[in-house]
Image (cartoon, rainbow, N blue to C red; front, side, top):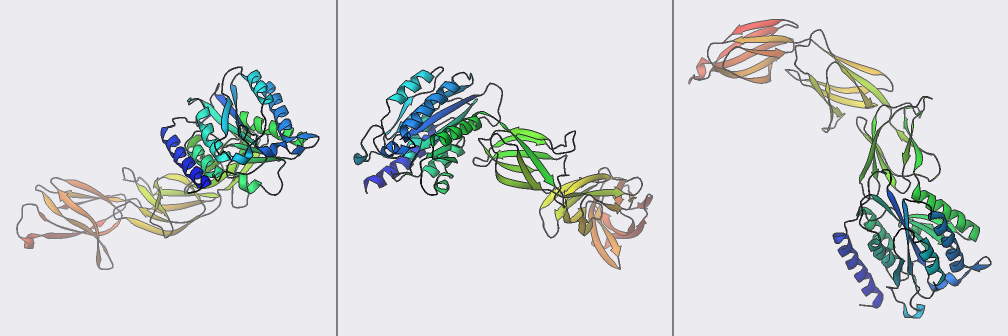
Length: 461
């Protein structure tokens, strides 16, 4: 096995051990006084001596990181640290473990970081995967924090590691939020190769680098506004009054719930979200709708359009129901998956489409192909039931059948020990029963009876 293959195997093994032992986690919300920890991961490989304008890439990076360290020093809920790779061994040696935490997280360590930056001299190779893996150990174990890595690099992985796999694994385990990558002086389309690691920004001049670094740090520190438009059939954001859940798109961890509402101007209200996450958004309509991997742009009001056109279903019973609690099972047309159990004498919203209903009367009533249309109420009426009062002095067993066109349709079992009332839909029925202790089938009895809506019919067994 070659050196690079050995290194790749070692990184994979170490990462597995790391994830099994690490107990770091990210808070799913953003409580007050939550600490944000930013680890600057600086590329000091030999290529950082290349020119950027009138200076070298490494000098520009060191200058801007020093300024950023000063600007962050006044923030009480922010801690920073510095890890560097490619600065301890010459490139000819291809040392794929050349990464070091130069300054750890601590209060008031900004001057220490500035002093250490001055002494960094690029030498070696680019080892992004292994550096990300080791960076996971740099964050103190504390649940009330946001762990963020800002990677500054001018090249791709050179040690046969897989930065994408390492980053995804650390995010899924809750060790870090999605990293930021600032690519400096890169040629060609490197975005596709870095966007699997985190959010990629490119800078080819010192001015662009400074702006990008400001944007990245602002994104790391601040929530931004988001508006979720629930679109009707015509593409207008008119749907509202429904719960929405937000999940981290990488870890699938639940983050927060809100109930969608319109503000006083009649437009969807604004919420604040952490742009360090990408979001899976679940809208709890019936059936639910979702939009996955939504990116919230830092410092910019993000509008998310989700089609959720709805109409309503009104289930109604004539007169006094006679039922203790009558429900209908709602399924999508042609599907057996139960979407909802709706109670009668209620109105419920549904995504527009065609549905099947099974109403839990005796006997059950089935409706197929019920259409729910945009902003309209579809009403289904069920006849007021009647009651069948079975009078007996001894226990009986048997069955109730509905007679339709000469056929007997089974309705329910009968196992009664005393007078019992059955609530039934109007129609003609047959009661077939025998005494519980009777041993001869020939002594079974059958009685036909008409159940009338809103009335009670008595039979004696």
